[in-house]
Length: 208
Length: 208
Image (cartoon, rainbow over all chains, first blue to last red; front, side):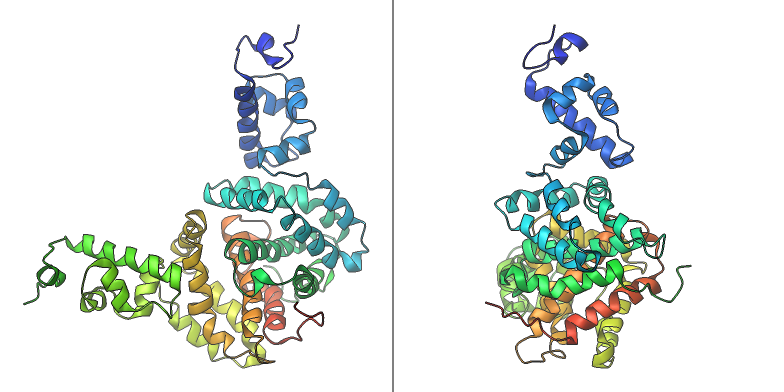
């Protein structure tokens, strides 16, 4: 028989409060996502690390992606934005990406997004941020730009350099005039950079 | 008469130890540089804030720029690198800048540079980092790229977005393959971005 508010209580013999269980799951998830990345982390392993049943993880957090979003304290699921970005033509992916990401940063959730980013840098949870960028935000985009074959990760890494620095400079350092610049103008500046990284020619000097 | 190790002792009547005085000067400098920026902060004001004489500030730290470098805990003075960058033709400034900056990041001082950057974000000393970027690193470069007149700050802000995100992605998040990429290839990828920000056409959509 499962307790409504904390089904783990009867299964593990422990009787932590609801928030204690949630926190234990989040802590387990953060550790695993940071060390192993998104793909190699199973909900079962997160549950085991927290000493609870997988069903409880799903009960509290939904899908693995939703658990990840909760574990990095993002107030929103990036899936909707990503879907919109991915619906763009490949030739317009740079503009769609910066438009979509700016939309998130400059939404009502802006403070929480910035706090999450800053906390991950400050606390040294860089594994989480790396996982988020490469395996959640940029993975589906990478699949679109692997031309020539094998270049996709390099391309999306470069996109990450531009976008992470834009977040840092505009929203954390608040450099002026950048911080006060209309989003449309930021898009006009940055979209060609992203597009070149995504679909432009590779540097001719070899990567040895 | 001035004490060899701490000339302030006789002037102020206080007898702090040498490191106590140095720390007081650095603390005063950090606060003023962060709040007022580099130009509006005088050595005299830093000295006053620390309760010591200006001569003592010069005695311990040298010039105002050297004091600033010490106050952000940078292990090296960026002046030499900047001079080399500024000797490049304006058409080649983007390549010279990323080459020079990568040289500093990937020198023996790399760890200290990265620690300073990270600490400034973590502790919320973003005023110091903003001052460093805009008034120490990018000011002389801005003077070279103010075409059309009034566009220089916008241009160097955009350079800051790309370079800060490169430091973050390559050296702190250590995204792969970027983190293992030869510096020459990073230069080949990033130089055209910086050059466009510095001397390319402004976006046609207006900035209102």
